[in-house]
Image (tube, rainbow, N blue to C red):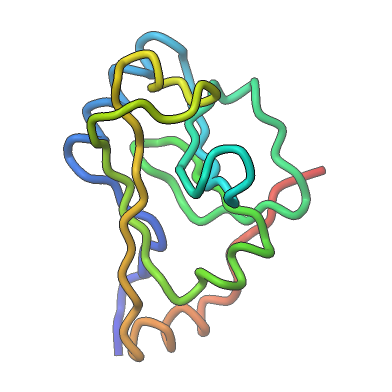
Length: 131
């Protein structure tokens, strides 16, 4: 049996460094995993007070002190995966604060093991945002 809580979202060292730089420019930040409409399936980074979290958003965890959300319908598909947020060269969406730097955040994922899924089930569902 696994003793420690299983993180649903992790961050690469390169992404952690970029988050710190962006926080220095924009203040507190928030991430939301895009559901694929305008921004593909990219993790979007916003100044904390410029994104309204809704009751259908699921809080997956924190990366570098920044809350990381995903829509509930998308979470139903991805709940058996651990996400790692990385950064790669290339222009992402104009809505995410890293876009002017010529880099974009990228989600990598892996399927949780059976033991990890059992531990997550014991922990219960992640919290939802507020309306």
